[in-house]
Image (cartoon, rainbow, N blue to C red; front, side, top):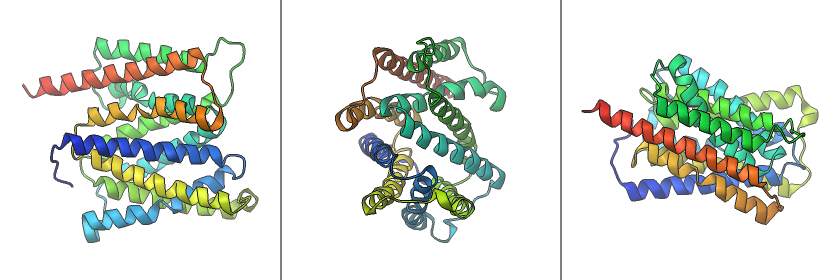
Length: 296
């Protein structure tokens, strides 16, 4: 495990860089959506993330780069991580980028809902109120009463739900296993799974031209870089600060998608995104208060 040293400026820089590279990954997925199949996109995403993660894991742990102690939890991390990745990519390919990003960030709401059942953690009235606020935000984002609801909305909700289960699993893994090792094994497993998928569905592997291949290779690299900065941020600042700054991705995604793809979020979607972020920030704030009171 890393030695935690509080350096807030460095931690904030790391998480902002993680957000920027994560946003670039989303833009690359959106850009290549019409020219590369889902299987092709995921194959390149996983395969080209592995070398960088392997390098950083070796630098951090040497011969222990692939050693994990909680194998069952690692398997769950692969399952929920892979499911979340599939739904996240589908959401970005089929929804406006800002809307997809806001839906995915709502995973903190689902973590709070699941905590009493899976973590046996009590949830107070303020956090339940935040959950209700967040669910209202999700309703605004998806606008189910408009008379037309895209089935693609389900991808964003399922990505958030898978992300919630993943967060719970990572809490357990973080207590005994190195985060870079966990990320390396997960991405290696994803690369193997997608290679098998290509052999099973060979017609699904296709690239229109070299530019698409370049974009998908970049997707794998920037995804790995985002993950390394995200992991590194936790070693310099508290988790709640990391989570708070991650919400920058929602407005940045909306603005960038408007500039590059002419995607315009409706007023309801913007209000929904703001409501979801507010809900998640309140949940994070209550988490800090709970942690601080337990130290007294």
